Image 1: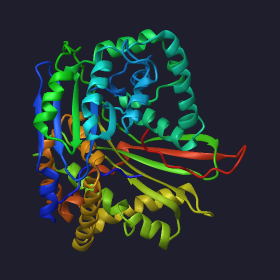
Image 2 (image 1 turned 180 degrees about the horizontal axis):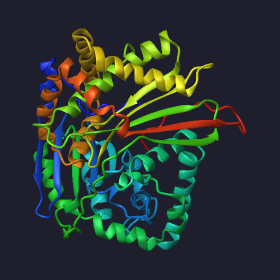
Image 3 (image 1 turned 135 degrees about the vertical axis):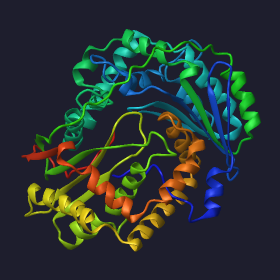
Image 4 (image 1 turned 90 degrees about the vertical axis):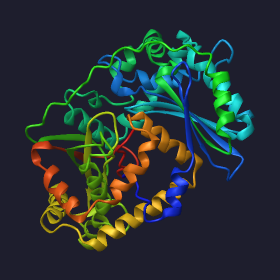
Length: 452
């Protein structure tokens, strides 16, 4: 399921204005950044707290601790008992949740705007006063282990992607699964979670994003009141971890009960480091959309509908991250077709672009589809807050968005052809195959799950 991070809107000037009109930011004395996007269309607000810490910051032996700590954040403080956080959000007429990624951990509430101060008080409380009770931990680690069984161990497609990452990355921590290896979860202690919390959950390693029917100056005042009294603390140095150059193709096979085989081709690909000067990540984003960005995209049109080689075929590429990037092609072959047939077909589509390029009409149509996607995203206050939060998490700023949109819109057909020639090299390729074994229960069709 492709994830589009950077979408061009210069074809619609009114949309560009809406997207970039009014984020405001300030940084409190303790180092906490606060970013506010005013949107007066409904009397609601989204309140998000992002920590610049994710699974890539873990060390071997404690994989999954970032996600485990996310669970423990709902287990109470001296002021708010276990499970009480969710009850208070619900009582305020809101909903809340949290998510852990390779690059960050985030918590959010969607609430009536008048409840914003209450949410800030709750989040500020657990930012520095979390109770990591061993009894609560003993129960919650069982929940996480069951989550791993359900999402990965019992899901052959997820297991394939997990093994793909472990093979594609050898030195970089992206090789470890976000949810953690089961052996690490089995041996994890409350002390591990507490150490993670004490080290990384400080205001100078966090930022708050708020969107909705709010006034930014009032929000800044509330932030100073609730978050400003928390003390910052020096963070441990983060050592750069660079993945060595891959010098030949890698291939893995995962055998698991499934109805159909799945094929994944994963190529090492660059991501944005400098939005102003980088070129190739923008062209790769357009290439991903040409192959799998809309109903008329090449994979769906040719491989699924015309040639009927694939039951499904897709692309996953995100061009923003703290770590290295991958460009995935994936799919399941149709009945009577083999994995080898599908691999040849996927490679042929890339080769066709390498040889013939893409037409101006196709490029224009793809950009128009991306514009439509941006319109839908801006309809959501949550989507706006997510975009700001993700930009900050990977080392960019919401202030870079206009530059990134302009640069993406400037991608030419020649740029797309050039990156197709440059990055789809077998020396940087990891191939994963799900070899379906006899089912032990009800039929299960592949559910492609690129991201945890």
